[in-house]
Length: 468
Image (cartoon, rainbow, N blue to C red; front, side):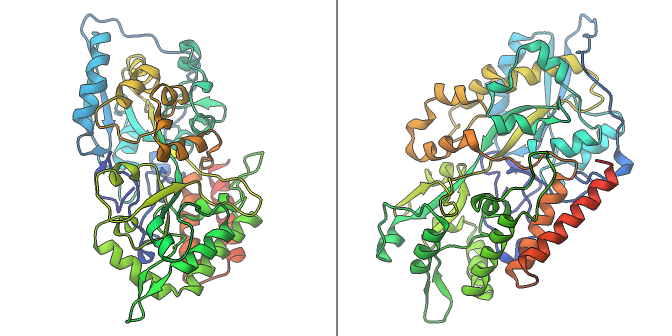
């Protein structure tokens, strides 16, 4: 989720830098991995709604002596197509000689990880058979009837929700029906510059464990040059993966209650947004923007420059940090939590879906089942360039001994309790609203409670429109 290009490079698919001036222009369909309120993610795009039907039992295969070719759409650029075909698709085709897989790159729309082309193809009755799909969008697309209910296939296959991390499986379920299988995941931690901490008189081997400690340590790292501009910064809460979603959970907040009612104005969410705004005021939003913009011009993750004390980011940047010879010592730790709270994180990632109207639904399911369950997951995870990827299956991660890497272990240890964003017809809308008020708050254009009360009102209005 970098500053989004038309194609998503699978080796660098997250936000790399978040200059303050671009806070609204960049969205996470993540990831983290997330979406903007476009036709591809809005639950009210009536022109592209597709009538939903029940799929409680798998469809029978079409009888033909010729191999069936399924069309698989994916949005990732780089070497993904070549690597995925070599490591996974070729093996699948050998095991299923009656099925051929045609891989088709389809670009995403705007700043999202969704595709208007995919939605249009579904609405027009000519969709691909399989799509690599951001898990975060499953709720909103399922509500529109754009995805095939896989519940019957899952039940007959013996696949269990326990095969996957609990939160990841929850993202695939909408109104008690399964619409995808999880594949690949990520989460967030706190990267810290040990060299800057030591220079500031702090213990480089004791990262902060609470938000109060983070504030105190970050303050000592801030340094200005002779021109009055920051030459190094301690921490910018909204840099990279430091979204309001991230910090709200760190403060003990929640985005939905036990009954799945959306709660953007939870009191702890309000505290988190006010805390972010306090940073903008204390350290001068203009000066922070200047620093952030300068970092953006380097084309590098700000943390790699050695001028950032602390940064919230994901396990994926371990892949990049391993490629560079940095001139400073660094570490990674769980994100600090509120006083007496437990460290938290949130996970994003991808899934495989069968779009509504697939012409080869049974064969498509065979492919989805293969690539998303243990065999396909292992094939992809064992490829030479796997790096520090985390799979959606705990037992696979254990088999791969990923926790032997101490930096990756920080992220793996948090996965069993990682939050995921609410599965809702307006999940994407809520994400964008949170980004919108985050930008307003840090620019001094509204107090936290008023802004989040407004988000709650807007979200409830959108829910009323879709009748959920």
